[in-house]
Length: 245
Image (cartoon, rainbow, N blue to C red; front, side, top):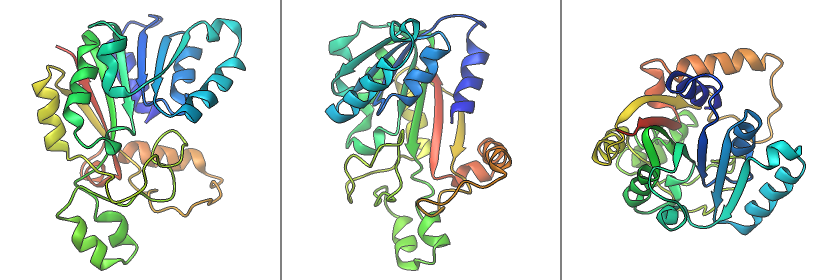
């Protein structure tokens, strides 16, 4: 996903431009810190106090120049309008968050509102069109059959976002369908510019499995599959990039 995001940012903004980035649901701040190290000014929003504390600890270990480019806000991602003016950011990230929000459209609309014209909106969501893949490949036929007719799912014990434990494990966790999100992005004047699959082949990997010796090859395969039909359509996660009109 990071490679996909970098590709979209490089294609939209001049090399060397220091961008204003908002990371909503930043978790421990992994992506926020990575972008700050690249020279961007990053604001991270996170509701969970423990995650905010972990992010602050991580930022505190960085050199002063990087620390100065990071601002952390504890708050609900649905309240971006309370904290930020319209058009405040060039890039807005919302990765692994919509799956925990019952009504995602108002949240996405709020993200678009704080995005500057021509800015990039990056969403990482659970793929509602492929929920039968994991149980089907595992031989759980009853769960696979049920998954065709729902957008709810039980999260895998492995994490869904930023290395953090699932925030609300249970049957109320939800997925998004590509067509529905495409329509949502059109409706908020940030139409879909590109989309990728994430975890095409690796979603069923066992918890705690050792990284393979040929990790770079694995990543190359996942990256290629994530941009290639029909593979990307059955990925566990979808990475959608919209551009503010």
